[in-house]
Amino acid sequence: MRETSIAQCPVPDEQQPLNEYEQLKESCFFGWATRDRQDYATKIALIWGCSCALCFPIAAASFAPSKHLGECVLCTAGGGNLFLSLALLRLYLGWRYVRDRLWSPTIFYEESGWYDGQAWTKTPELLARDRLVVNYQLRPILTRLSRSLGAIALSCIVGATLWAFL
Image 1: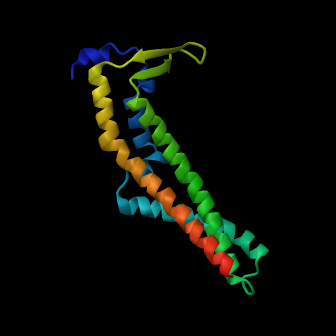
Image 2: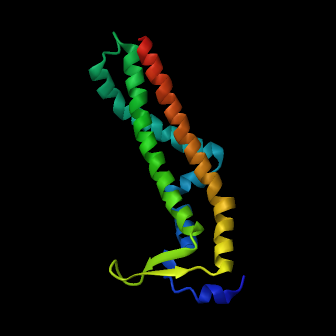
Image 3: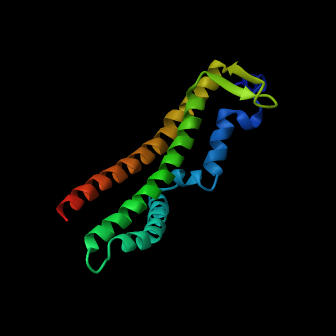
């Protein structure tokens, strides 16, 4: 790729989609989605476990564990799923935003504030580079997050089915 196409880009460095991708990848929270499978699962399990620990007192106050253990467990797990799904949704939306900016042939940016927005059309070289990043870096991240959200939805369906039999 030629350096002239990057040098001609009027978009400020912090608003260039590839730099936004790098910042997201290096951030503490959003970086979880880029880790290996075991580390990602550990972080997800940690969020779910902490959420369940917070939800258990509420579930135990609603359904006494000595009399209604199944309902208490299902309520605790449901609360854990709620907090976990919110965290995963935030991850997904952040990565999706960067994916959309990388994929788009036009970059919208602000020069000095919200009132002076501009648009710049990417050069073919920059567009090809950004789309390669989307296809080989971001698509696996978004697939992982959508599968995780799907697993949570499935566990909620199973929990609702079990609730009907209690």
